[in-house]
Image 1 (cartoon, rainbow, N blue to C red):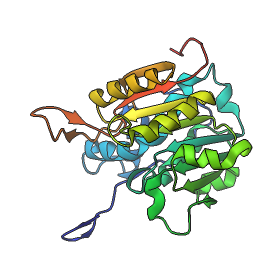
Image 2: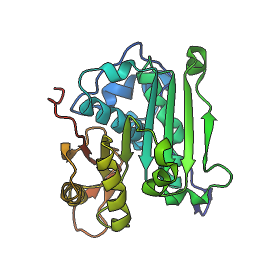
Image 3: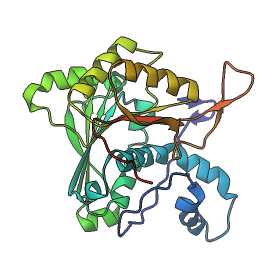
Length: 275
């Protein structure tokens, strides 16, 4: 996107620090507690007000943190954090969000020290704007700390709907650890197509999370998911790790929306959610 002064660049940041162990995300989001110290250290303890940078950082970081929040709510205990590899499928991926913020997914490696290989499938028709990168896996650059530890991040791009992609794989399809659709709008756009994808996810018993811009969208999407047979074990509820970049509702006198503001998740497993 261009402005009068040239291309508009998105603000994205994630710390390079590595956690020595997995620390569960709190149910009450506190962006200052999670990232304030790193941002302050970058400014030498002073600098401009922290609030705008926290809000700006949350726009991108809400993607990996929502993934981690979903995983911790859809798994019993912390065995999943001890795996050597983790595979995530991102449904309905777009160029202006998931692709543009692709570097911040490294935060998953930074918080899961046992994971040596993180593979992300970014799947969605909106990726057709890419040239020469779809249909293959790409080893992404990682920070020096990840390089020293031998941690790898692999992105695989597919410019198709998820059900089209999986249909083409046939018996070669392997279930991911989590599928997630960020801000899908599945109750408003491509409703029939999303229904086909959701039916596949349910049939294959794939743990899946969905985020929404606001409560109205979240509740409408939850209704569709339940009608299709989903077992919602999380939400719909406000996402404690949704973006803090609030945008005024365009069709209302009052109210705001934000990226990944609400979340719900489906799983066939029956267990007590972590507290």
